[in-house]
Length: 157
Length: 205
Length: 106
Image (cartoon, rainbow over all chains, first blue to last red):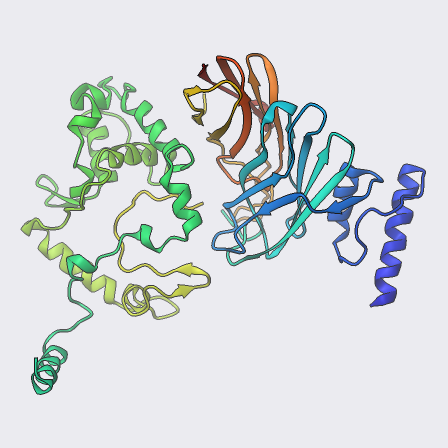
């Protein structure tokens, strides 16, 4: 297993180095085994920047009765001033057919960096929310959700 | 009551009342709403976040649309829905004299469409029929359900009770096996309701 | 025009942070469902949502198939002047819808 994650790390880094033409410091905390699609979707948003854990609160019910309508709230501790505000919030998932859930762009006059919506989850999985701050930093939160009735993949109409 | 007295009464109850086929006492009846998870209840509590209200809005538009060869809208006969249709949904299914059998709310709406508006009936589960039904049902919001108390409905209620109990299908299950014997438990994560008949039409997702 | 439910407070104090709730009627067909014959039902979703406050964009969202049917989106803004909120949804197959709400800021 140790070899596996090291190799995956290397491939991940090498892949992004080839794309960006520079060796990134780190894209994600290597200890988390995130599927490749999720990792590359996150990379599309954050590029080569470090994503730190914290400041972001991702609220999703831990046990979901129906994966077709899962209430989700993302909030970021931030004063929301012109000098210091949250520019955008990006939400990703691990096991849906595709990794993006939504991208939300706020203005400095938002007053509160918080959005709510309802999402579909195709399986029990991790959800990741990443906030981009006006100073260029990225912060994230990850939540594990158990889904008993899956969305997306079950349906025949 | 003395212990002997209690045992005697209990024995009588077991022997005499087929507890399953009995009506649930009024005080013990539970709305489908009470089985929902708090998150789902929250979605329904606020009219501006409840997706079902989108159908009610559509239904209100349809109520005022002229339709069919007669060129009539529901509003032309029923006028303003809030006053004229209040309480209607609460007493459906209702006995229809002409047909000699009960009709549910959807069938009643279609009877008006074909009979009064001379328009084609709306297909079951179609967006328009769901919207009209939701709008009509909305006018009875908060009112107690008062269906099936009409003596003319007795034979149909009895047939319904029979079907509710009857085992059928590949799993050899009757409705009662889950909704009577196992209500308030969970089936694959979903709450098992107790013979709930309210809250229709309900949003599936 | 598709139905929308908007919840914006009618009145607010200058500088107060208010929550705006929106609900738009749309099937949000994921593109992953199949008919019984095995054919894929093509994707049909709302892809962007935006809100302007007296003409200035204050919020924008990019939506993907993972957003539930009848997209429900809430966000906040500081109420600094009376006027109008204009909401716009666009999506696949040329979907376009708008809605608006007024606010009095004292």
